[in-house]
Image (cartoon, rainbow, N blue to C red; front, side, top):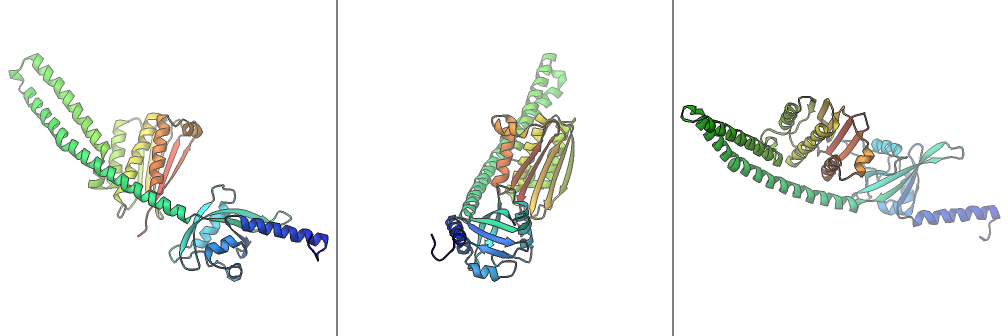
Length: 360
């Protein structure tokens, strides 16, 4: 019993104390906004996060001082759009806030609509978790992984160069010598000529296989001519290898400033996506799009094949197609990108990959 209050007042005070205790014991920040995005509530955790008191935030005009604004990007309206669209999303959205001392930190935001007694929306209530340490750990892991991949690519480049210069060169020399011997037919009997022709065919096939392995180890065309030329060349080779599949290529990309590791990564994801289309889709048409969009590099590969059930592929991780898709997803996410797969039985398959690009 709370002295000095009538029963109804006691119930209201008790409810307020209980709610306040719950709000303050939750380990995340909580902020409330009205329909005009004026802040109407902030719990102690959120105040501690940003460094402003609740009174300072309530009195501050929109946008609130912890919302980062820059001249290059109108970030605050974008944040509001993201929050509005994430109400039903269990994943939440990641965003950067600014503390009173000027430092920035990453947060994970979940949002719910505030409603009145009639069920009408009157604002938003958001929970904010500080994930700055997690983001820093992810960035560190990403940098280390990138260095590892770069080291692997350098090793692959050396092995490919050795194959090309030593084995490839010697096979080419053997092939030339055999062809020269076969050309002197007047000095050979029929069996010898036939044997030489067979040897030439074997050496030619081995040389082509060596060249294929060399190219798969490291696509030197990316180093020599760039990503755009490498993508055009690979699509052309794919078309020749699978003449029953028509490839439609669209490229809108300025590759100046793209890191070499991202170029190689994009090329390898394209290889895997096209190989999957050829081996599993039974498609007649494949479209490839490589373009800049804002501050992202986007790659889309879509086919009109038989498609598949996405859930069954994700479960059957041992399937070749599943492993290929998982590899592409890992390659995308390793560099901070996103991977999206859309498919259905009889509806073809669409693979979309995007990587952030530093606009500098």
